[in-house]
Image (tube, rainbow, N blue to C red):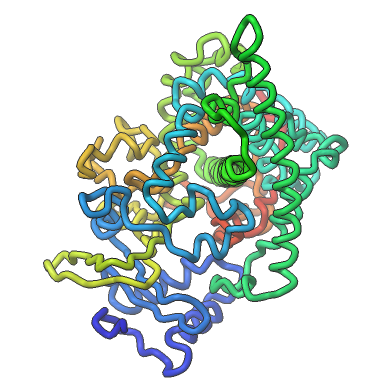
Length: 530
């Protein structure tokens, strides 16, 4: 069935290329490492082809790895025959359906259904609307600062993953529903049914071999079903209350509600809240709550770590904040002059864009059933139906033909004059790539591209800019364990030829639904000395 797809890897007659992955993890020496590291090693050892076929039957679908931005663009762009790009892979729903629901726009196969959902929820993620929610982000960032202050005072090793996750969930929860989840206040968080069951559900998505083996564990499947149902019940209550409030406001003299949450905006034109509509809305809320907190949390962890081992970059971002905020509280300045201030955070945005390039939190997987063909650089057309098409950002984002000899390095300066982190602006009405700088637009795709790009990318960028502006001058972050800085006999950091602090090891990623730092980013937080 797939004999026409070139592959230099020798398959096993019974298990295809599964053995190559197993050997790759063994070679890597860490079974919890993200599968992308193994795939990258296989790709390098097989001559760095522009695509690579891996047959994982009978455990999983075959996978076609795309390693160039040109091939990736062919899959995600809109065409006349595929106006919403190649459809999502069924593996997305199979793996993450319990988290986001069967009707999530993240997993929708039908283009028209996806389009209707995107149209319904787009107003809540419009950039001009998100700026009006800045007080929510600032308020939750204040709680984050309280937690960092406590960590700095104690001097104890802190898992930054926990602090960042709680902060970003607090933000996205209120942005989506206008309900305070109290995620950063443990004494109150347990009273939130949705949050409690969401956390329990998330614990069932642990790092494994990367072949989706947890999906065939009956106990794991039962837990996911159980906690997902409980999450739904909690969300349906919120949705019903929101709908009732909107209906009541229509009968009042004001005829409008002050609630501008994503959920409230999406329900504005709903005349009757049927169980079917409520479930569809609930699935979108679950999608936004999961993706909206997880990706931003990972981005923050990676930024804090990257800046902590790149002293020159840290000095530059602090200098930018000094020039913008001076001795004033960044929160006050952001609230009084939001548009002007956010636009001024140019180097901050470059750091965000570079962190997303090197450590993209999430990816896409597609599957065609109707004769889709990829056109190689030699002009050959290859039919790729019925296999999972995986544009591997870990390789595409580090392409030396695009990013040069510093492709693996954290260099925010490469984005000078091109700090826009939106992928939506780089595709025209015909689906044609329109670069905004010297780097091809398709070579940077952390929010993926084309019509089905991430609806929440502007919110993630806004959160990251605000939180960095509020904390990066206030604290020093010192990594402990994996990725720890090497020091000399006097206790001073050792610096390499590129001006970075030398580290004892690399802070690699693991896969737990998304791509996360493997050790929960364990750090010591210190109050910065003036």
